[in-house]
Figure 1: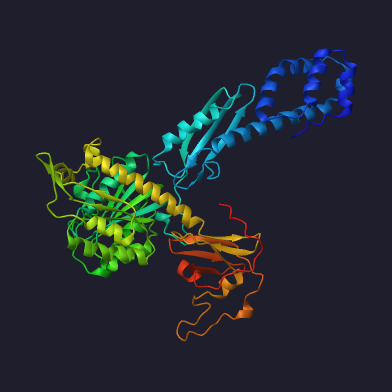
Figure 2: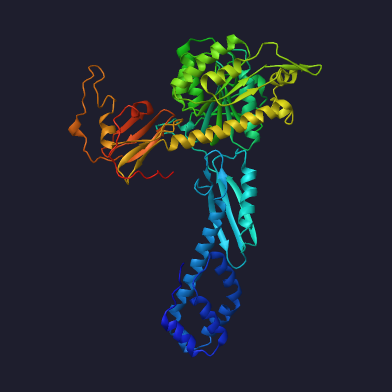
Length: 538
């Protein structure tokens, strides 16, 4: 319980004023603060009396004039009341749990610009979410209004919804065009003709319909599909003459880049040339701020796919397949490729899974390919797309199905896929951003690899001594160039940043930047004799 101290000099000055009203005001300030709500209500009742007291101060009464500095205590009381009111609001908002992160929105840092008008009982604040495509943003807004309005002293609530600016969480010197992209989604099939481009384009426009800033990169140089599936007014990519960067074309607010828009059509060239073209198109484009860049991957698991995965830090992958066993065999290769590159596969889309006629459902290509991928590789989400003439026709007409029929069955499936992608990307970003952290309180590096419940501790000096780069180990002979004594025992990292989904970049006091893959960190000798383990603060 907090007590508000009133100086004796201020108290004596009240005795000189023969006003029972003023004395009554003083006694109210001498009482202990019961709770923020009770005090706030009391303050509202006492405000007219305090105004009268302040006006008397200006009338020339020497007892008030000589003790003017004591009024700071009353101002301090207002500050205490406002602080307590803010605690009330934040405590109420902490009841709202983000299902993706599993913690409350206050701890997530979503509550911004909290402002309280104690005179009118008005409360306003902003909820800044991780993405404008958050599927439960309306629920957050409604719950925030309800829990704050439930406070007894609140008269009105104003909630503004916003989203964090697009920014990559990965370290490293990314090309300029990729530095303001939050999430990169690879849509892959590793087999042609299964509807991968259809899924990529409709997913992109679904995310845009959810409020996100989206771009599509058609990475198939041999047979680009994007020019057929969308109808931008400007069908030729333009280069900025000053910056020598590519300006993407747009259709319905989504930015588009494809070799098919380069005025070249389909290309006949060797693999290394293709990799160079893809690299140039992807990294020299002025993408601007994007929440999601959807990459329509070319079929296969060769050099082109590996180049894409190395050039851009992929957040997640969506796998497209068909019910046939042959499709599963090829898709399995792609899942293993992404697994080696530490790119999480968050969903499987089984295209052309069935059709309905005469009230019955038929499976012309059999069943089980999609579910087999989910079961064998532990991918959490499976979505079925039916055989629909409209879906095929929309791909040929230049208008995506989710745009042509936003309330249809196919659009509902893509809406569910979009929600899945948004939620899974949020989880991945949270896991990656907190996977490796330095805990100053115990002078140890905390490691919790994504998709693992185990947390362990490493000594900073041990991590530094285990660097396997060319600066520490001779690449030809394997001779250890960095000696044990070269690393001080009390060395501490200056910064730890995510490096894709597979490693972190650790900056040391000598300026050295160490790339430490999760796989390597899991093999380093762990700390066991440490002070009391304090849960890491996220």
